[in-house]
Amino acid sequence: FDPSGSCHNYKELELNAWNTVWNLMLDKPYDNGGIEHSARVEQDPNSEKYYEVDNQKSSVQLLEGELNADGGAVWTVEIKMSHSDTLAKYSESDQMRYQPKVGGFWRINFSRVEDKGGINWTWVPQTIWDPEVKQYKGKIAMHLPDAWGYVRFGDAVSERSMVKSSEYDTSWPARLAAMNVYYAESQYRSIEGSYASDMSQLESFLDLDILAPFDVHIEVDDSDNLSYLATVKSKRTSERAIIKASVTNDRLVSSSVDYDAVTKE
Image (cartoon, rainbow, N blue to C red; front, side, top):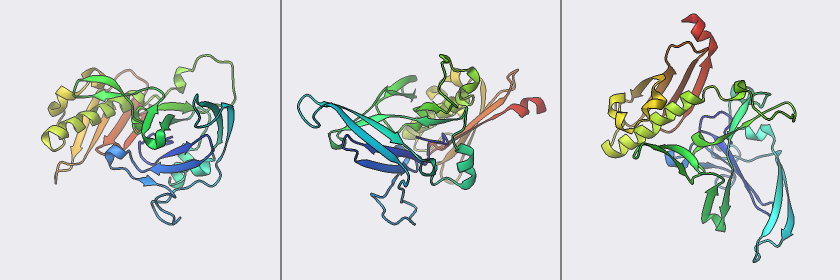
């Protein structure tokens, strides 16, 4: 789960039918050079690479069959997570910002690992933009946090069958556009050896329909052209807010929705 939706410093909980538990944090996705932070790789609690939970609880129950036997087994798990653990490694201000509250949401995903890590799969393919074929494609990969689903926090269980439009992530169109630039830049670098500084260089790798409502600005590090910051901002329209999102070459994502900006402009 990724409380900030930044694709960085997201937490992972793994457990099996014996209730053997493993917790870790990824500073960024493995594809971006991310490394595991956990008590497995670092036992010193004062180390930057150390991450462990203190207040998490879990329980499993075997419903039928026998574990590791022919014919398989059916088991269930119940997990209770403490937000002193889930929000660990965040600054105090960010802990307050991302603390679960009614109407708020986190990015979340589920996957399954089998055969001692030899088999990994997600419940559904993770849909991302493939700039090489200019299509959205499903990938069987867990560490694509930009493609994860959402968990929305409510006050109580209700009988509502529909989610109000105001309860969706209103920054999503800008985040999707920013990630479109990210995947296009990754493809461009694989060919040219450096990142593009102008959108015209990326045009053949982009979904222009997704980007049409936005102005895009790319800042590339002039020293080596091996890092960048891309920002997308909604164009001036009759919409009620200005939506912005940014992404870096290592997939650090941020977004904002400014309702006052329309009034000011």
